[in-house]
Amino acid sequence: MDFAIPERVRSIRQIVREFMQKEIYPLELSLRARPFRELLPALAEKRAKARQTGLFAPHIPEALGGGGLSLSEFAHMSEELGRSPIGHYVFNCQAPDVGNMEILMEHATAEQKERWLLPLVRGEIRSCFTMTEPEFPGSNPTWMGTTARKEGESWIINGQKWFATAVEGAAFAICMAVTAPEAPSPYSRATMIIVPTGTPGFELVRNISVMGDKGSDYASHAEVSYQSCRVPVVNTLGAEGMGFVIAQDRLGPGRIHHCMRWIGICERAFELMCDRAAKRELAPGKPLGTRQIVQQWIAESRAEIHGARLMVLHAAWKIDNEGAYAAREEISLIKFTVANVLQRVLDRAVQVHGALGVTDDTPLAYWYAHERAARIYDGADEVHKTVVARRILREHGLKISSSP
Ligand SMILES: Cc1cc2nc3c(=O)[nH]c(=O)nc-3n(C[C@H](O)[C@H](O)[C@H](O)COP(=O)(O)OP(=O)(O)OC[C@H]3O[C@@H](n4cnc5c(N)ncnc54)[C@H](O)[C@@H]3O)c2cc1C
Image: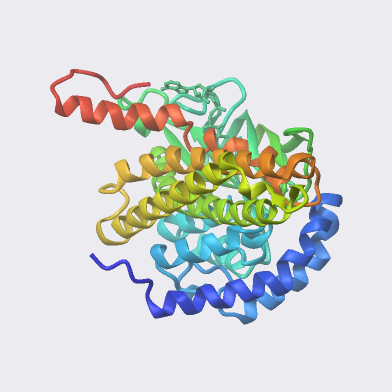
């Protein structure tokens, strides 16, 4: 087993690290002081510079205009980018576009790739993903209310979605809708359909206020309504009835991206915590770091981050070498483990900073509010734990179904 980080990855990390220091960290304070949309001109400049590194859309093959990194290589880069809330956006590998690019690459027709994937890779447009619904549990994606029925050469879509990230400003949505309600398997009832957001019947109802922040443009989560929304059948993404399978394809690598981004956040929070502990004096000559409880938080955080990173890199290696299906248990394990390491490290870092920790003078408060959701999206903790435990218990002879 070789734990050495390859030279190519080390040089990518170095390029990104320097870029972050020079171009990204200085913008962070404005991010927290102003709506995201007001930052777009400054961010466009940074994106132009990011393109020059050859690492724009790093996870996409070079032939399609991306950086050509493997999942394991991208995992390392994602950690570096995760150190700032805007790192992934500047390098065009932010959710939900990152996952949408991956499924378009895998399942889109040549015409769909030309129209949607390539402009997405070039960063000329953005997209969103509308699957979760207010009236149905997102934890059971085989059960949803949105339908699409065929009328001639069109799909007519009806339904309500919510918590769709980055709808404002997106050029198209990928919509998950039930197209075969009578199909015997619940896993083959839904289809993914590409919907240009300008289509009559597609409506952004509202940006949802999340932890006191309504957000804007890319940094928002919206409620969306489809009302007799008509799109051509040629906008079907992949085969009819394959929606659930494609959604699973999207989530495998997606969890590596999220987990490594969270490890980047942990590392930055950890550095801030250690720096504060070393410099903030409780009394003359007595910095916080002399207290045993602070030392314990530092040691525990170091161990947890280190363990989390090794788990994620192993899962990425397994996906690269054996495919996402073979790595499904590792993917579930990292999803809930790293999301919880993130909560603990952030909480300790805020605590060590005292009142400063809840101000917007550091990125800690932003992450503390916005990353609580890490334990919910892409499968809540409990769902992943149930999946893993059931599989193990089945090996021990327990008869238990896989339904929710
Ligand atoms: C910040 C953020 C961004 C998001 N972005 C998108 C997006 O771009 N597109 C999109 O379609 N969706 C998005 N989502 C939605 C997300 O995928 C869902 O919130 C998630 O799947 C959970 O579904 P739910 O909210 O309906 O919770 P529910 O399914 O109602 O579950 C509620 C709670 O029940 C518990 N629970 C669920 N199942 C089980 C079980 N089997 N055993 C024990 N307990 C269980 C869990 O604690 C869970 O948190 C986003 C969500 C957030 C918070």
